[in-house]
Image 1: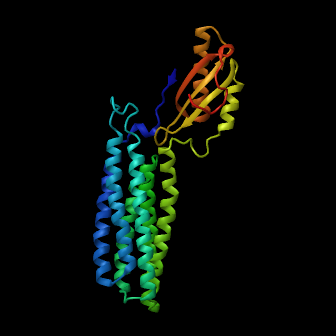
Image 2: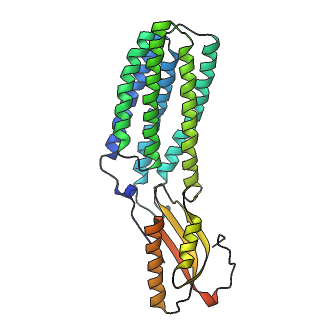
Image 3: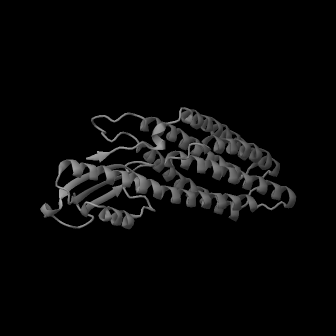
Length: 304
């Protein structure tokens, strides 16, 4: 016996794909401009931000492909559907960010030990252009932050916007005070920010793929409310997980005092309604058992 629900994620706004593609086009443009500007000026922070934006462009491409795959209908091979494709896409994108962060940190240390000449005006001009394009990209993705896939891409764009501010500030300081170590220092700060951001987000993706319950899910309250419902004698083999981003699923064995089939079915519907309203459980599979006939393991969490 089970219940189905529909989340906001499944509504699939028609403009979502267009906004992803728009942000992708902007990031390709940002990357090209920053590579040219970085080579001309010798600015490592521009090249560092270009590398980050290149990863963002690839990330947006993967996010778009994952989003398209996630909208496929369930089939005989994947009966739960393809919604987790977005989580896999997010995991791929975030993993590459760790590699980029390590590389940028290495380059920053090398430049701090041997600072090159950097063109401040080029940093300021190209940084200002990148700031505008990054801000527009973040704005395009703002509306679709409901899934980890899109939220991760949005946060990347927001981080890029802050990074370009750092590039502009670095260029101004070089112009005013000729401080050569400012550029690699900003690069190091960008690498640290990328690493922290990637670590924070990748834990969420792994949690979904490991079928974990949401981090803030109140398991104790759920257990207490189920056992406190009229007609429920006991609850065991209770499992809560996220089948994909934005949905919560549950399965449980429920020992009931109702012996009449119609009464037991009415109790099942009440339990499912309570799960939806109080805990946001969109898919609940309940195995009802007569309380006086339950003989197996009584542990709350166990093999079903």
